[in-house]
Amino acid sequence: AQSVTQLDSQVPVFEEAPVELRCNYSSSVSVYLFWYVQYPNQGLQLLLKYLSGSTLVKGINGFEAEFNKSQTSFHLRKPSVHISDTAEYFCAVIRANDYKLSFGAGTTVTVRA
Amino acid sequence: DAGVIQSPRHEVTEMGQEVTLRCKPISGHNSLFWYRQTMMRGLELLIYFNNNVPIDDSGMPEDRFSAKMPNASFSTLKIQPSEPRDSAVYFCASSPIAGGKDTQYFGPGTRLTVL
Image 1 (tube, one colour):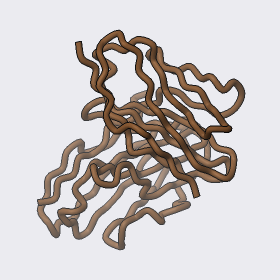
Image 2 (cartoon, rainbow over the protein chains, first blue to last red):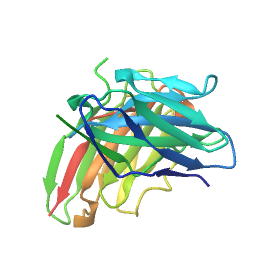
Image 3 (spheres, chains in turn purple, cyan):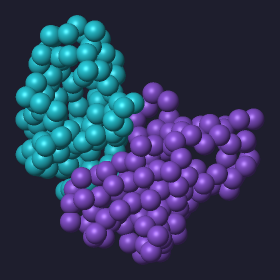
């Protein structure tokens, strides 16, 4: 079985400050990892993904994440946030021998001026 | 491409009525997923189709829920009869490869309210 834990349900942050959203997973086999963003009243949109290769992954809108296999983590970071980054962020994991994408509970990021 | 298209965007119905949600995946994508999102349970996978064939429907809550994919460009999720606890946002997603081991492209969702 696999599970995805997003350690923070709410993250308030000031504009132009850095942000880190934490994600840990548990799996006995190799995994593929994703971060999705959901803006209010919209569907989910892919921010970035790790399938293989370099453990540092860069995505859209200045976000990046680092896959740490030993710590089973895939934390999302952005060095300087904008008001428009206010949204809910979901970490998701799929096992290499499976097809089910498991989502974390989500982290709501609120960016204040 | 227009992306994944879902209709209706909002549906309000009364308990006991039949509800049909529709999805048009991105052309050329052969995997299709239906998800339900609620505050209490987050995002749950309801059913997964590959090449129009249902592969896993273990997430479908009960017999009141059914899903079909008659062709590569259309899928429906039906609830009959509907109950207030079915109120949620239902998302359809498609992926270009089998099993969704790559980006899943989500539609805008259908917000269902059952009174």
